[in-house]
Image 1 (cartoon, helix red, strand yellow):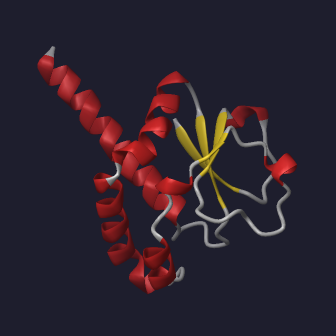
Image 2: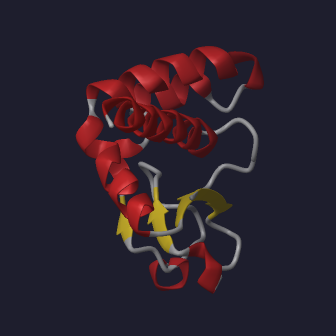
Length: 126
């Protein structure tokens, strides 16, 4: 299971493995209080894509498409998340105020699609 949580929300024991998926550290959050296992900067959208998107919901579909292309080109950036998800609950930590149109939502969708494809491929091979 892959969950999402804002960096400003308190950590819970049910979060499982907490991974920060932002290129920049969340403003106003102390490193000691965030309680993340890893900071995966490279899985975040490129600086160019992030600035272009600028959290504009009108650009959401195009942002997702461009971000998915970046992720497909760099599987090493997201593979640790898939591996952690095979061992238990993972919570992706993000800093956006918009809880519907952000890189964490897009990344969660990308990873869930990837994991479903892997499961289907294993079933077909069996």
